[in-house]
Image (cartoon, rainbow, N blue to C red):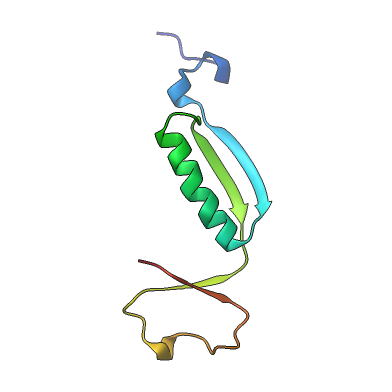
Length: 82
């Protein structure tokens, strides 16, 4: 069996669209990801790889003690991970 040589020859489920977004605010990226997942589930979007950066965040959980969190004046956003 001959191997596909170009992206056009590959089955559609093998194809991956690369999307370079650059710098994106964290909250916007998070909201976009929810929308992108729904688009994919509904079959209105192809397989995509999103590449982006966002400002620094500190991720914490319900088990994180207050002593482990930064002071209220920290410029780094806190993001609770469920």
